[in-house]
Length: 266
Image 1: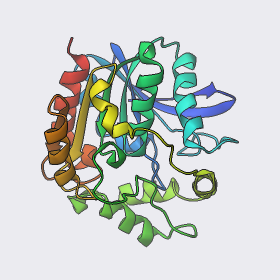
Image 2: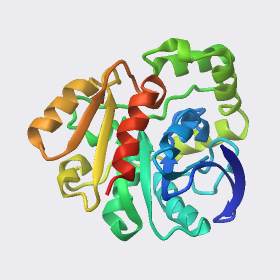
Image 3: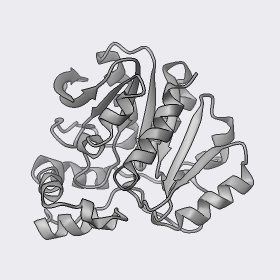
Image 4: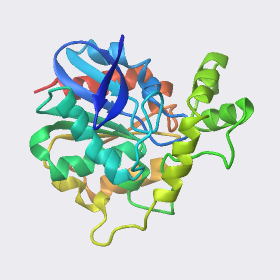
């Protein structure tokens, strides 16, 4: 695994990268403490499918500088700017939690730039049963180490994966400039858009789409996946057993095998 820094839209951006082949961007979610590191255990296994896998710290996360604009729309524009900086005319996108929505909206708006899509644990892309928070959990003040552990464990089925090392890393990514960015994102949130919900349009997605959810994810994800399959049987929509919201940790091998085959296949 290589770590590199580059300039994107005036920001110093950190990326983790591994492998050669068709380019795949791994986009982390918006929880306090999220960063490219949530994909660290998946890079080698995905790359083994003949893929060039790139995981950036999105603006305001990890070691990437904070942007002036903390909106979701800016993070969507940033993905295209990152592709330009990497000299990628086209790439596949894997979006976890809130980033799954970013990836899908990009595919609808710029289908010529998106080869394939993998959505992982994005609640807003399932038929709603209730209002579901989408990957933006945090605390009112900078979290303590104990609070960071509790937030991380809440997103895992196998809580043993929240090791002291993993919690310490997550905590480092939750304080200082990253906590200030978290607060700014809360302020930047706007009201929902009118019109047809995005989840009702997925069957018309202009690029190949794979949707994966942890069987034990929050917001009754398993029930909602079953409902989505009834409504749109043409969608490639699967549950990962013994996995919660951080399904790429809980079910790392299954995720890499399923997503890797999909992304590498013709």
